[in-house]
Length: 505
Image 1: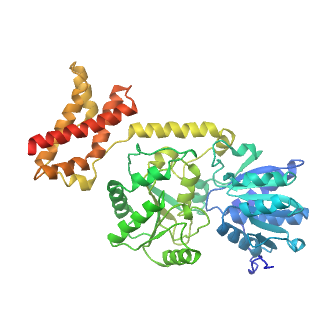
Image 2 (image 1 turned 120 degrees about the vertical axis):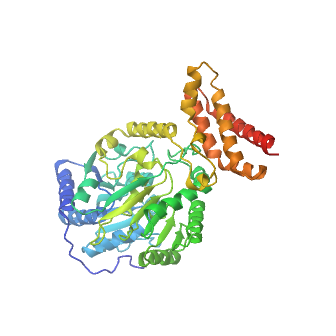
Image 3 (image 1 turned 180 degrees about the vertical axis):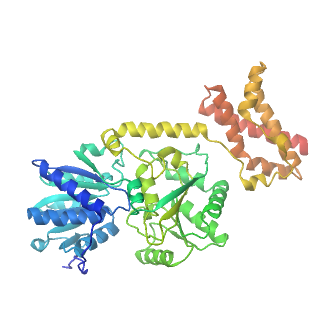
């Protein structure tokens, strides 16, 4: 049978003080509790969690004589973990789909396994692994690991994550872990120059068309529809040109369709860009990442494939070309740019999903203990913030659209809330505000169009602005339903186009 232990030279690594402190805290917790211990350890992305739990495995084996099992959810993480263990002289074996039997189990003190593979082995034989004293769960916020816990009722558990918040609201982490140990914060690691600092630029986006799925985040289909629009593509290219041109840039998208469109957008604009997604072969993925690593000013557009198990310190800009309600995903994406080097102490974040307003700045203080103990309270807060963002969204006509109205002047400005308030003070019907808005748009289109068909095109370009004005009007009414808002927008557009036909034909 093929030996899965990696042949890697042993390397004496000096731990950073904060890493030694974390290891000390964890072992003190093991020592103070009699019987089984279930600990969750939090440390920001880029803090070296793999190094820390590898050292923990080595020390635990040496102190107790028992074996350690490390669980991961991705093949790449298995290989990285095995390499890190071998470098510090921990004799380990990867359990993957090629490893059926463990005839050589006495040779190894540590195992690294994929969740599904090990689950299959243990369901066939619950004695497949023996004398496991400690189970370490990497990326412990994922719930796929739970199915394995029943096989290790007598083993200590150490979950490791950057964000101690379950990926499933209905399965909180405090059901499986008794205590949360907090490592150094992002702000502390930046201050000590272990992580790069970041400047964040936000670009306001209308997210009202997005739908929330059963997992609590926006659905991929609704995100792809929104981020494939010309207005969003234009905003992305403008944001890159303004804030990141000439920098090595990683773009995160919601789905493959959007990422491919982004690739075409930047390629047609003359930039050095490649696309990467989960359908790529191992060979193509390796070649793409090598190109990205070795190419100055490279742009790599991808989906979720690079949020874990990817380390490229030369990344200078992270563009979040999507909206998310997941704090974990948010930190994973940004973490890809946080690696610090001798020549890089700073990176740029471009937020195109109102994520900062929803989830806070990456460097902001987060009370992880509160989130761990009361996750429902946190989810409710995010939901409230999200709802408020929908109300507070302020539309600004993009440059490409402004250029289509060269004959506009100050008299063409229109403030729906102000007009509504003035009409109310004068005792006029509120609906008059919508009529005045249609007249305003009609005048703008007529004086900036050569003919009726040119005018229809401009009317279509104004759909986002029309939706914004209708929403402001509905917010003034206070009790308007979503169906009324949709009806109002459709009626508005129909009246505007009828007005164009009367004026220009």
